[in-house]
Image: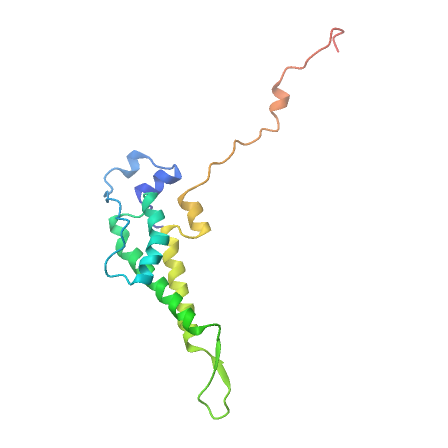
Length: 157
């Protein structure tokens, strides 16, 4: 099982100093996207990385992976725009049969990579619930009413 970093434990409320002392501390990442990203990838950075930086999840150590995620997401969006809803295309065969668009398989592979990377950053509802656990309401004790003294009327009943 992969160990969660100290910041994740703090957000979850499970941080115990005795267990997390000695872990490396990384500074928070800059909200500015890396210079090597394309304009489309920079837009993804502003949309997905900045909220993670502001909550203290994304550090300088994570910038490279987040940049890869942003670049891959931008490329996926470009492939989907190129497909334009054409999931089948005419083949080069003599009978002119239609075949699955090869770009569709590429897009599906990219989406699978994107979603697996998003899990690492808590960018899905399930992984986010693991990162930032919601406060649970106090459980209702069904038997608490029986702990109260019985009120008796003036006739002893």
